[in-house]
Length: 88
Image 1 (cartoon, rainbow, N blue to C red):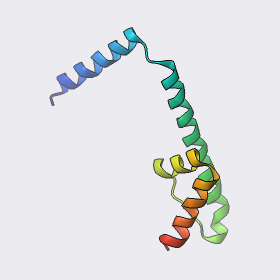
Image 2 (cartoon, rainbow, N blue to C red; image 1 turned 180 degrees about the vertical axis):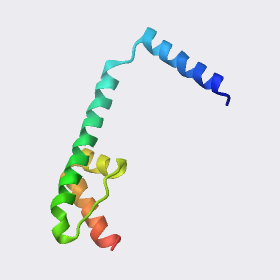
Image 3 (tube, rainbow, N blue to C red; image 1 turned 90 degrees about the vertical axis):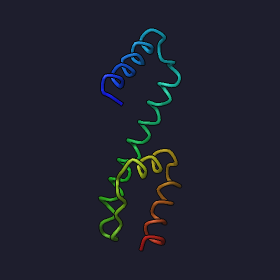
Image 4 (cartoon, helix red, strand yellow; image 1 turned 120 degrees about the horizontal axis):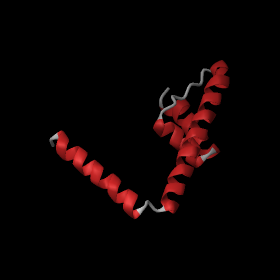
């Protein structure tokens, strides 16, 4: 697609959202999910900081942060099991 069409479509979507308004419940839900992903990334950071003594390092990316943030401790336990049993 040509850039003119892409910018026209994006501009139309922005105008439509400004006129119609984005539903606030969905925006709140997206905000809560993003906050959980950030908390999951921080949790993985601390696991990596304290796990160096037992040679435990879980990479921090969107997938692992989402798993640890949305699933909580069972998600982190699953990541550790996957790292220790399957990948090594």
